[in-house]
Length: 116
Image (cartoon, rainbow, N blue to C red; front, side, top):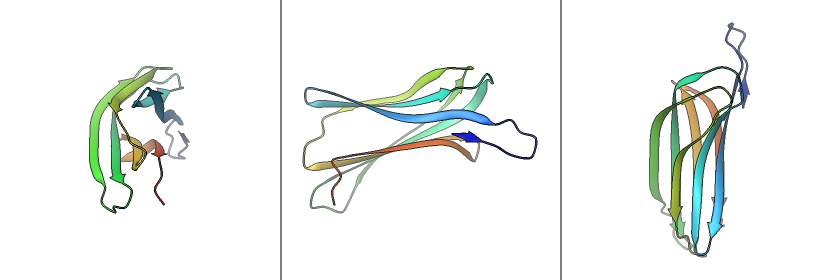
């Protein structure tokens, strides 16, 4: 997501992406952040929020990961990786947020086996 400000700051070209891979009975979720610009991005923070529940329930189990990282120009970095077994009767929601201080600069989300 690019952000433009008229206060003289440069536009940001940092993207967040949740990648999903399945092998056998396991699912792997990778939280990836990419810097498509020629500018060095330092002191960035990520938050990966995973919410899981079984069909027929309203309560979610929460797993939250946070961390700090830097990105070189044109660098793509996996900031968090999780491998787990998800059953057909389970729903998983994943949210990835990337911030520079308090400013949200990129985000992505994913839903597996959505329960309606």
